Length: 366
Image 1 (cartoon, helix red, strand yellow):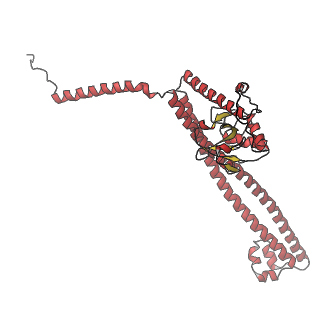
Image 2 (image 1 turned 90 degrees about the vertical axis):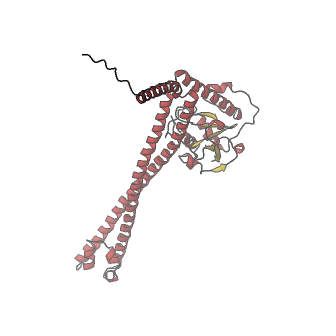
Image 3 (image 1 turned 120 degrees about the horizontal axis):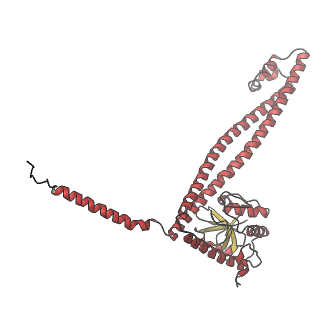
């Protein structure tokens, strides 16, 4: 006979748990749906984050430049030391040959002194420290032994110095590799953010930067009416009653003119021209064209000349430094404008000192 037992009803506790879980799932789904549109940052947020990444990349770039400069310096020093060691070894061999000739002559004339014979197959230091040995040698032989001893000591010091510099070079190369990866990582992160923008948003950002650049160029040209520029907006520069700014010196004017000739040249980290630059690469290249050798990195350039702390006292061609760690440098262009290589994705251009992204610290007159 079929059973007429009623089906077992779920307990009140189980119903409550299931109902709560279902409600929570619905709530989470609703929250996720509501949050989804805001997960994608807007154009201004992306630009702010990208600008920050570019600033961090430039910080790392200047450290990379410093490590690269140190590497090149160490390589030159090691090469010089190794050349000196090679020449010193030749001189030592000649001195030994000369002493050997004395010994041969002494042998032919009646026998070689036992102490000299022993020396020829060993280090002379232990013999020179013994007066009894010196007393048994001729004055000419003693002089030859002293020269050999001095040459050996010099070579030993030079070899030790080369060994230490080689260790330093290895550590510098490791640091260089780390800084390069750091720069590349920052730039890759920035590019990924930019890739989240639509074509219209990218165009809007580019248009904003172009408007700012044209405004800065007009300001700079009004301060330097005789200056020429490769930008198309230079012909439309508006008249100004501002007093034309003069370079602080002939070399400053020459450096500024050289940099003007590179307007539109792309920024590339670690580059020193002439087809691409980073910030300190542009300034060091520009002054090199004026016959002045200034250091490679922005931090080192900051200590090269006379510091000018008041922006009102700056003159065209002065170096101008930004951010607390001095990781950005450009050339003062007059009227509160700077001519510089800003960051990845931009070209050499004029820009207001107020829009660099970091505080003006001071200028340096070379």
